[in-house]
Image (cartoon, rainbow, N blue to C red; front, side, top):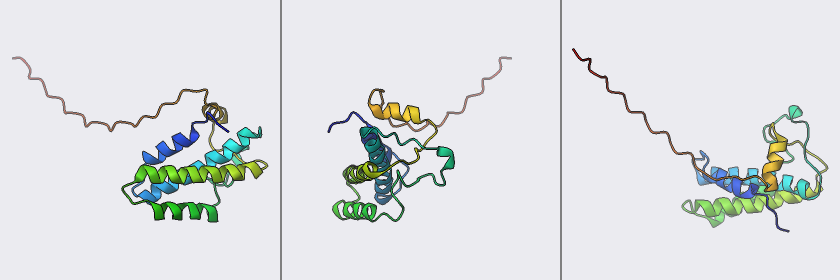
Length: 156
């Protein structure tokens, strides 16, 4: 099945451009968020919106749709990526972890009877995932330090 949902690409980009200081933390970021996106995609494909009451969330990463913190499958994905990739192959490691985690999240989403949707604007999120909205991947340019202004000499 082909999809126009750009969420996996956005997740990979988000992990690659995150503030993660190590490959391990960038891969974890990618895997956890890709799992979420796969889970939500399963709900979408099956016509079961995953929209729940976000005001009742007890965690910023509720499970489901995120993987449980003690997920054996998530641990296996992270271990496999760590075994396969050196620290200098960042994008490959992130993409591998994201793809595997997205598939795992999709499988859990197919079995899920409903879960809370992260965020405050589920309609916007659904529109973004639909592929009907133009999204651009850009990296913010670091702010350039401002040059001090020269004082103008008064004419006397």
